[in-house]
Image (cartoon, rainbow, N blue to C red; front, side, top):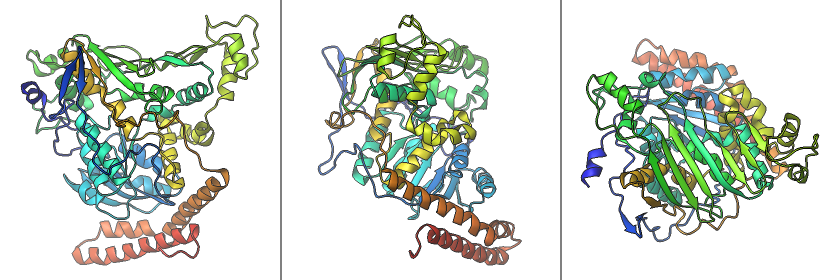
Length: 554
């Protein structure tokens, strides 16, 4: 208990987002565990009576997905911009602690010809936002401190919720989100964009087709030297007197892989985690802290003897089916960006960094449906370019075929757009989302479980079963798709809605009315302008609804 209290300090806020401080440290204040033959076993809460799992959860189709964004400092503005390009979406609200940041994102809607969103701000702005009945999805892109409280509020108010990574900072938050998703029957999705990177999606398709045989071992990582960015992170005056910035402060106060999901998510899907297999045990260890410790000492001008996280953290995990996964984290030392992504199978091998490559012998390439162009092909070397390109073309993932071209135009490698567009697709078609609340928990729990391991001489730690007994109910990870006819009908209505909204916004001169309302000289003028603006917005919604649903009143 003393150790927990010692480390249960308030985490500072994310760069560019000024919410009040909320504790989000990696050690839960109420985690209980015991030893079992040398292994640390974390106690798991029982599922409440009448509460059922949300594996393959479906919800009623949402023809027009009305979304609200909370957190518009770093990742949030990019998400707003992407949603401006997804048909059948209405951006209802923008929220940030500082109103100016939320208001600044209106320019994206203006440039896209969409109607303005309502602005929420202040310490509790998201609370009022979540109470609105006309919001389907709350998209959480705040600092790490506020991922959980905003998501919790959204779920409690009956909203589907999507949360940037890491979506939960400790086991207690994982379990609370699981229980809320199960009770409300609302989606709670981890926004792990690396699951939608082009190489990872194609490798997943090959894995599912048996190209690599049975995958026995996988590697993932987040290796990204942040020396050029440490001083950019927001410095919270209420809990960061040394002005370290929130991310350095978090590494100083916490031990373990605090940012595991980029490396873990894609390989977990390849291994069918909680869809026929599950993680059972981990062992974690780290190097001593050198880089982080030196940074703090240079920044503060005094010795730092309490830096928790080592420069490089390694976590080894074993699954129930005897597979092994290695995950690494290093944001301190100078080395090239690397997420590793390696798959070792009984018939082949895939790796993404430092360059994308696949190793198969001639017989396996032929069995996979690709005719080799060379005679001396063996798995001792990587495929030549012609064979590699042929294999990638044959197994190009359907999500890339559908969204990849637009994704590349949207920046950041295209994976963010594919992630968002795919989520909207599933909501519009009433399908299970690609990543559920159990994925969220299993990919985010490495911070606390790894800390428990390292704080006890790198002891083995048993994973909780976040599905509480249902990890074998679903056989194999799959992306859900609607039948072609239904998919086209939904897409046609989505496009009609967005086109009608843009036309109505221009016809009703909504942005002119919005500017008049915002720039009104006094309260009387403001009230008059607001009345005219509200009338125009109502006309836009009516026209949009009529375009996609003739005869339906809104």
